[in-house]
Image (cartoon, rainbow, N blue to C red; front, side):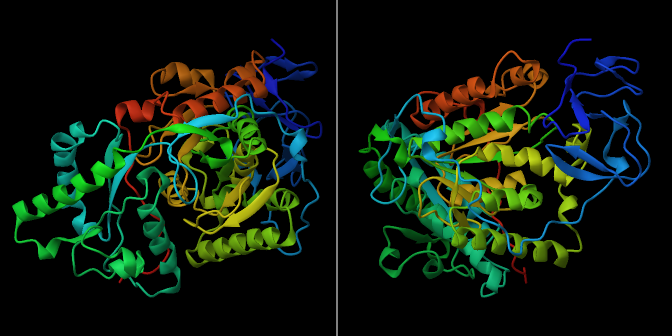
Amino acid sequence: MGKNDLIKIKDIDNVAVAVRDLKAGTQAMPGLTLLDDIPQAHKAALADIPAGGAVIRYGVALGYAKADIKKGQWINEHMLDLPKSPSVENLEYGTNLVPMEELPVPVRDTWLGYRNENGPAGSRNLLGIVTTVQCAAGVLKVAVEAIKKKLLPKYPNVDGVVAVTHPYGCGVAINAPMAEIPIRAVTNLIRHPNFGGEIMVVGLGCEKLTYDKVLPQEDITPENVLTLQDCPGHDAMMEAILKMADKKLQKLNQRKREELPLSELLIGMQCGGSDAFSGITANPSAGYAADMLVRGGATVMFSEVTEVRDGVAMLAARCVDAQVRDRLAQEMKWYDDYLEAGGVDRDANPTPGNKKGGLANIVEKAMGSIAKSGTSPIVEVLSPAQKPSSHGLIYAATPASDIVCGPSQVASGIGLQVFMTGRGTPYGLEISPVIKVCSRNEMKEHWFDMIDISAGDVATGKATIADVGTEIFHMILDVASGLKKPYSDQYGFHNDLCIFNPAPIT
């Protein structure tokens, strides 16, 4: 068959990934005849591997063979023992710092955004109405539909109205140590860059998450906060919400896009529904775009603790100093303890879909996941939902769950997100646009009107990582500038806002 039947990443690898479904008996490489049918994205053994021997991909041991594996045999998730989790103690830092001048030069150096007084610029001009408790969600959702129908047409410069509802606020241990995470998320969502500095918070009146926990005292005013229990009935509630919203919309309508440097852009990188091609095509292409953005002065955030945990030494090598390395180790250790308390380890992460897509375990998934960070030095490490204080590449420690990682990055202030997938997902965020990049052309052909960019040509040799990375870079700036809408926004595919809450629920 053709030269692109199998893809091998590193010279020392003893497995390779099938570009397409391959039949037993196929000569997939010179001297390699397949003993089994190999599904697309799954691994074939390139050499005999004895029981206990390392199965190597990306130049690292994905695991150890439970029994002898013959050359040409199909290797799946049932055939490997998971390696021991790498230590976070005494990690070497700064040993793999790529100089800025070696990163790819951005092909554009400005974008059209909404400048904010503090922090990154907005990619959208939205009225964000944030609840302090889930109890207010039903009222607010109805009110937002009324705002869209009755008020929004009067304000053509406003892109939309977003009800920021979440499952927090009451029935919670509000003073528990880990309550700081969801409280920080709500606090930072109120001041998201896409909300233009306009504060509108709706509470019920008896919740534990009181206004003073998410706003400074000077901002707790009748112009900014509204308590439903103070309103005498339905009509009064709706009238009060619409009256407050109208005043905020008047101010937001005065905002205009302006040409801005890349230094005022903050974006997030995430992947979900990954397969074995994610680390070959989509994620490295996104990483190339990330490097280009960082060289241009932008800030790029990547996350997902369990999906970098097995590559922690690689990340430490890219940390600019000991302080950043120590923060990385601290966040990894916290998550190790969090998983242990729940009676699981990091390998609870891969899904049935990941495994069907050829990912044997969390080690293999992590090696591909890290690729979306590119090669830039890591300048800062954040706790979940924390705002960055630096420009450049940032690691934000969040759960890997798509629907929790996304809101965590949004709370950190991303103006948009680039989301890589192998299996396909309609995931989207209402506050920040989501660009969908798939790892295989078959995925793009199947969801031709839901996937924005395919990186599949990298696997077939028709395009390079730089080609697709540049395409992603252009789309990032076009979407951030309001020149294009990703499919998720065109259809209104927006997930619920699931903020991370590791604290007890009472």
